[in-house]
Length: 127
Image (cartoon, rainbow, N blue to C red; front, side):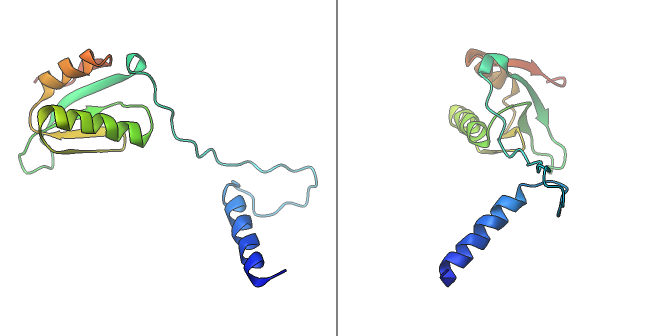
């Protein structure tokens, strides 16, 4: 076996073993390894999503951001929805950890826009 093939073999084995959970070694010949489930959440259709829209000022130096929480889906779909909202309102923002932050107070407009897009929306807070 050539040196390069040997390296490829060990790399493949290390990737395979990273999926195994809670077992280092077993002498049982009938033992089957449990493997991690690394699949991302599939994106639900808009009518099955329940999004919470609120105004947030905490830890932002007094600046307001409109916050959308509760999105269930892949990171790519979350970023697509964030981009759609940022383009609609002409402002900046970010999307991560199933939350979308839009700079400024656009809570009422966002609720209307998301309902028009087919999402179920609840407004949190007194805005």
